[in-house]
Structure formats: structure tokens, C-alpha cells
Image 1 (tube, rainbow, N blue to C red):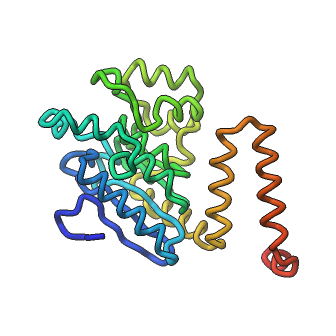
Image 2: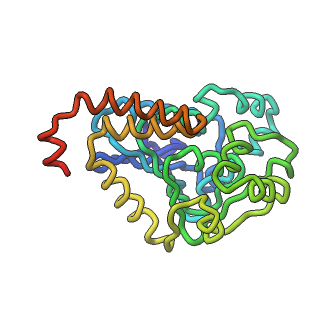
Image 3: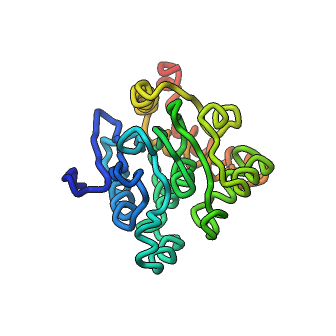
Length: 253
């Protein structure tokens, strides 16, 4: 991972926490082909590094987390829109995030629009600054979501509210996002990254293996009927807990 001035993704590790920053502030951190490829590479590298236990994803500057796909890039080469619709992680950042086994915190520091909203929702925990806003403009630009927005948003905020966002193409503010359950917390801009680091460090304090397994179980179960999910949890629990040492469990408790 390069931290050169030309890099569209910057990575900085503090202890067990890797902060990944979308670095196109002049373009509201729009998701260009280069940025998507660099983000996928950064996630692969972080996941393969045993010293990285938690990832924080944010945007450079104070205006945008990400404004979504780079429409200027697409207008100059329409084939890039088709490329963004693939499932390949180098082009599909939502899949790249969901495939990553590390817990990921999205620190939404401004606009999270369309593809930027899809990116945020692919993370495990969302927190936002007071100036953050969230919206879907797919209908306005005449394309269909391809990174999970039409499915994931309704599961989080409910189908009626999701349709309001899809059909209206208007942004909701951070407080509304909090009220609707889209984000966990809203704080002043200056407090966003300190809160993200505080949460990340608290996650990183735990055994990284069980954290990754916990993430996997929650994500798998979310797509199952409750009965099947309970069976799956029971199977994982019996396998995992059979290896646990009672003395160690008592000491940690």
C-alpha cells in the first residue's frame, strides 16, 4: 500500500487499528476505478496482517465520506459503468468490505451518497459526524443499484423509509439516520475520529479470532430464517466452546 500523494487510498496503522482513508477530497472521494482497486488491495493487505485487528474507513476532508461512483469518469468512458456492476472485489467495493473478516467501522464524515452509502452500509458499525448526510440518487441518474443498496437499506431502515430514499433521491441528515437506525452514533465533526478510534481500540482488545467468527456468524444468520439461524449458531457454539478452557473463560469474565 502506497501513501504517496497520487494514492487514492491512504492507510495508517496505530496499534491493532488500521485507518483506511478514501483520498480524493477534491472529487468528494468519488469511487473511481483506481480508488476501488486500491481499496480492495488495502483491505486484502490489512486482512492478511495479523497485527491488524480492526479497520476504520473514512473519507479525506470534511465534506464527503464518498459521493459514489465517479460520474465524470463514467461519462468519458461508459464501459466503466458496466465494470462497476461486476461482483469482482476490485470493482465492487461493497463486496470487498463484506469479504473482509476484520470488523470494519465506517466513520462517515460528510456526504455518503449512492455508492458511498452502499460503501458505508457494507461496514459493520456506522458512526457519523453532525454534518453527515445520506442519500440515494440512482433513480435520478437512471441506473439501478448494484452494490446492495436496494436490499440492504430496506433491511436496516424498513422498506417504506428505504423506498422514500430510493424514489425521492433526497438526502437525510445525520440525526434522521440515527433515528432510523442507519447509524449508531452522531457526534460533532471534531469528535468523529476520536470516537472511531475509541470503538476500534475496544474491539481490538479482544481475541481477533473470536471477533472474526462473531462477525461471520452474525452475517450468515442475518440472511437465514430465525430457526435455521439458531441451528447454525448452536453448531458454531458447540464447536467453538468445546475448545474453550473453563479456567481462561472464568478469568476473562
